[in-house]
Image (cartoon, rainbow, N blue to C red; front, side, top):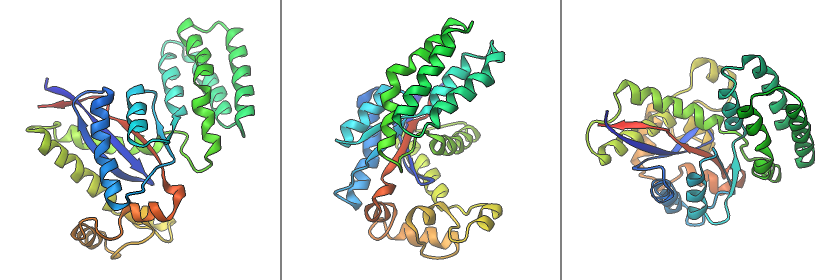
Length: 273
């Protein structure tokens, strides 16, 4: 087994915006790793400030983002809450579908008041059932976290779950597994992570996605609203030759404030060999 490290990953609008190694999952190291994204964003736009960020429940991640971007609103991912409860239902599969339906019903509330009301009904129902204590405790704990969910209603364009992040981290996981993770130094590992991110951002969508879309062919174009060339490889070569001086992710983010909402997270474990 190699050394365990973490990857601070930032995504937005289907693009990988940041991926940097962190030696630990502590606030200081995560802040340094996420700080690479923050620095590069501010090089393109000194006034760059995301309104919201969607994270899992890892406190160190949330603190790191608050330290990097004063005033950013942290929104807790509701999906991770459901997955956490789902894991505790492995030996109680009879409860799984019922609980998931009731939890998603809470999520789809129209406003904070309705969210709180549905959550109270869920908890009252759970107390009257014969649920295992480990599941019941998790449901009752939702009241403590409710404000981290309902704050999202103040930002209609914000992400309430980290589905986008999870999809792109699956892409990272597949590549890292196929290459047997890292073999070398931290600098070379970071370069490998950045190359994965760049290739993802410029790769062409599948034919089905292109057929259903009238104006976007690859993630870069979807994020920025333009491309330098209709061919994805030529677009990639032109964009990379600009070295971030013209256009790019944060030109679009600066011009359109509702794109300043990013989910983010960290890979749980990577073996650094």
